[in-house]
Amino acid sequence: MENKITDINDLVACLTAAAMKPLLNDNVWQCYGYNKRPIKGNIWNKLFPKKFELDNFITREILTMGLIDILNGIKKSNQTFDTKLLISIGLIDQYLSTTKHLFSEDLFMENLFSSYYAFKICDKSKLHEPFILKAKDVLNKKNFAKFMVGTIRLLAIEHAADYLLNSNNIKDFVDNSLVENILKISMPEEKWREYGKLISEKILKV
Image (cartoon, rainbow, N blue to C red; front, side, top):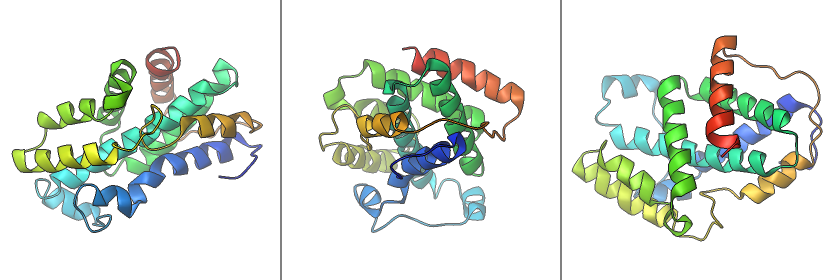
């Protein structure tokens, strides 16, 4: 990340890239038994959803972990509440725009909020448990076993109550940024207002 940013849109873009970076890391995928990050076209997902069940599930959950870490960094920052909310809405907007070919927007957001609730109440020495419990109801036995072992391995390293990114570093980055200009949002107004209310209630205020 850059040391200082003065445009809120540049800040949101940097935070989005940081949140998604773990997904591109081969080491993350190697925890789950892959040689490297799998690369496939969207058409194969649609033609053979069962074949890529594990890939897609890991993708969604890694994206969710990174997003939660970034949101926690925003939440910890010394910016005003309204500014935190604005940055968070921009982050969600870019996230959904980038992943819309993979996941339904509403389902992804539902997963984010349920995952954040689980994060808040779980023992921080057992951050893997909520994800494993979720996977048990979704994946077949073979894929569940791979996901369970991989997630335990991935989160075995001490992260100081974060998943994959240091939220304190994110806080410092946000605090060191001057949030200027008008935030550009691609989603419809009714959507960002809906998600903004939920982000406020289910993440920033808890």
